[in-house]
Image (tube, rainbow, N blue to C red; front, side, top):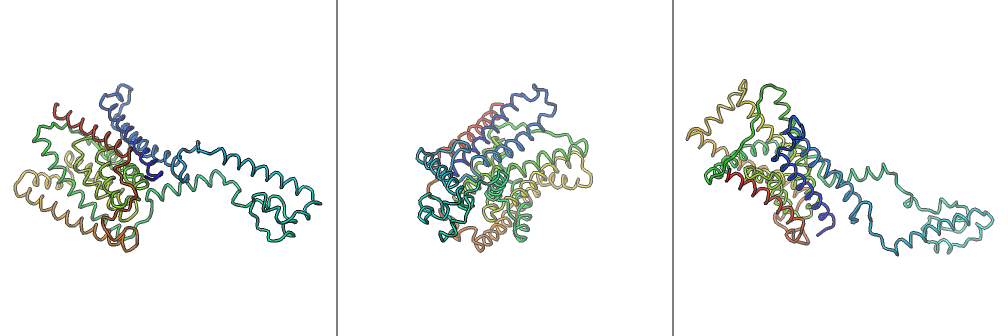
Length: 404
């Protein structure tokens, strides 16, 4: 297991635990007790922006970006021998400075003297060395970087690790087609999943939003579509890609499974896993986080739009009419099943083309299931702890729905 992957798994585990705590606080109605008027908006902003955005961003900068194999940012494990060598090097620098303060002694300094002080210089002859100043003897590589430069390098490393890169025009078009297909596929999976839960006695309590005006519509679009599209992908695709990219195709399974369990709600488990597979595959093939962000946004945007149309109708009332026909008639049900099958076929075609482009550009191996990982993921402690928390929370939501 790589040191980097271990640190990423710790960061993601913290994200999962904080999400669980927020859900517990919401279930206990703590937000209302604190006098928060819009508890839903507060919950969404805290989870999306802070937990899925700020927390992994800051922790990754401190623990991973630009730190190579060091574990903690301010507590490097330095051996006594290394510390002693640093002290000796500092003393040698001071000695050189004292020697060259006396210009009369400079010509008699032999070439081998420069080799014994522990510094590499660019002077080929004794004459060149005698004319040099103490500052010239110190390599430019030893000059400390500014804090701004160090921070800039960390940011660059973070964005690169998280997959913030441009996508080709052809893959962008495929992403748009795939986003539409996944809305249809996700709807079909959700209907089947909820039907099965209902048949075994699960009682679902659905949230309801009153779309009284356009202000509420745009508010819901921001909270339900924009924020999750950005920050959930940042954590569940970008962060995991940074840590598990070396696992190759297994990143897709890890990301989709964690994404599904992260919702900690049995009702959402089915379609979030399927959507997670699609978005993780796209990131695996393109190496970019942007397509997944668009797909996530589009899926949630469509869900909010349906809720608005159902209550207000207007120019988009025909959408509600079509949905009613699909779910209330035998012919409509058959057409719906056919639409899902066509969407699956089209989605597979888009993914196949993305994979071919990825292989051609050398982003992935030509063998679909080549094991690119030195050690199995199943041997990692943090991996299992994250799964355990997600399964426990999801199982609790299931039991709660069964006894409700």
